[in-house]
Image 1 (tube, helix red, strand yellow):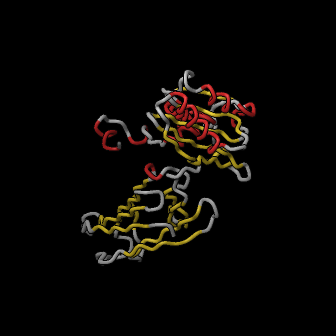
Image 2 (image 1 turned 30 degrees about the vertical axis):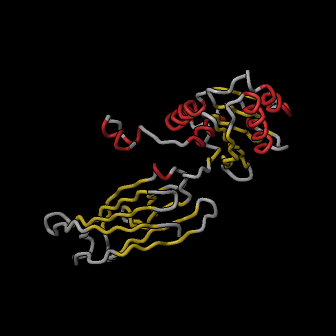
Image 3 (image 1 turned 90 degrees about the vertical axis):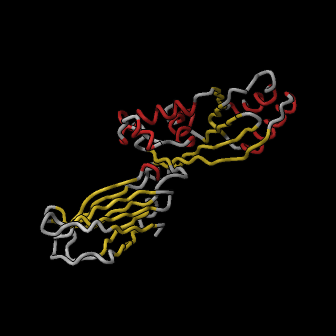
Length: 278
């Protein structure tokens, strides 16, 4: 997808990747609050299979956290009465006696001709039922608007499976004063988490990262040694540093020696490490 951005000339900061669960979250929280005052269910029907997801909100923290949990799946018969029976069984297994504010059906194949009993079961406990085919696309549109305009969901944090849960930064001297410099902020999807910068070493042959958990706040330190770094006077070694995640829990770190102008030519030596959860 990133290569496709480049081909069509779309700047990376103007294009985002988003999973279905996050689109579900964005769609639901842009509806009337009474529709998500309790749990929200989602049934996705495609071909001869149906799957269930459940959205819930915990308001015990600030910001409130939103999770989407994947539930059971079921094969659906092509015979109408059996298909209705299969779907009713899935609903019972997925929702049980829990209270849901609303339930969304995403399908081009939900036909009133076979779903008579299913609809009756769905409407139990005064649930609000919505059906359509474009929930995920609408969720992506709501997400894009959220990122560039409204910030309506700033009081909520979506804890998806693809979320980076650790802040990564470095302690360094900026404009003559000690400071913390943020590299990767927790709370973004791993495939959007990247940072590139340049820094000057001051009497050290290693890079030390401060890694803190988004949930517990616990801080650890991770050290990356620059073995074989050319010997130069203090503050005459410039390093290009790049961090990029390749999974929710592993960050690829690359450092390149850029030297210091004509006085101390670059060796372009490259160091690479994979940092997991620390």
